[in-house]
Length: 193
Length: 193
DNA sequence: CTTAACTGCAACAACCGTGACGCAGTTAAT
DNA sequence: ATTAACTGCGTCACGGTTGTTGCAGTTAAG
Image (cartoon, rainbow over all chains, first blue to last red):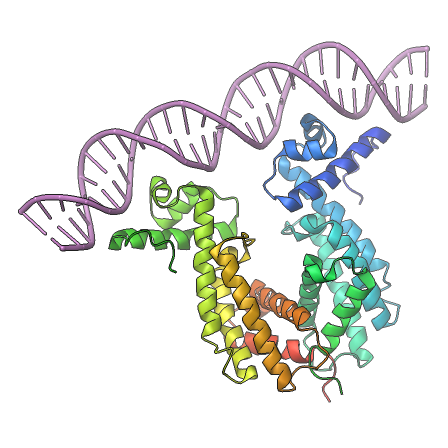
């Protein structure tokens, strides 16, 4: 289930892998076409070391995608989507996801390869998302006639937009951003009664 | 004002430039790292011909961005953002922009170079967008306390999301999509009174 | 402590993309 | 019809990236 645990890596090797994945995220989010050399330098590692763990460039990318997907799944799970009150779950999940997605923007923006682990994880998260929305609808937070699939897409879009971070919300804490997202999702811009 | 009209091009040359720009959009939207060769082939043109009009690869990219920005500006202008009733303008602009942004997704997604023509056009459009929202607020369509800059970002995000096109809305006409966007923007998902 | 894993370094071959030529042939403009 | 613009083709040099290998030195694990 985990990464690709062919065999337990030695402690230092595992540290290297982590450093490489983190550096890859950092460098590739700035320039998707960056070279292995650049990633290696950013990781404080020789280029050949990367090739030792990840045969092809694409192998690194896929590992990156899987790693990030797993973290995102944790973030959602932590919000107790099935048990917490819908509004609470929605807020908590939103705040958590903002954190993770901010740190792993490139990896999570990658097109999901059909058979990959990342794809499976994302699918599962899509289902959980719908579940939360259904529970919210049952609580009359959402109109009965609303299209939940469209709503989920809107939710994703709001998350993405919040992450771009206009100059205005530099240094604004995650909970505030999450509150704005949830509020916008549920009420839109119309006048409050 | 137009392109980079150093001198009037011959008729056939102008056709070539068009074909190149259109092919570049098509190819690069599928793979941002595609080679000049691929673009040339898609345009039905020799690679050297591209280099004749656009010295560097980046020059092509910038021309592409400018071209698309101009088209987008036309789309907004056509919606009469300053004179038409806000709701009408909003709908019309949305529908128009959906068309243009669908056809020039790559070029419009490009990071705006600080001094470029595209950047100036986009800035101007941002202002016009705020104007429409202000007019809508004056008409009580939008809550008085609403943050119009956040709202504009939400609007952009909804446009972007609609363009990804889930399998559900394949073949749905632009006006329907626009209606959904405007409705979501103004009312969100909450229960209708 | 001893072994096996891990790493950096240097060097290698192979490939691909870029940009620039000149030349010969075609096409629009006057 | 004449001219000037335009294009395709072949070819060139150049630089950068990739992936591999061997070796020597370092480091974790038993």
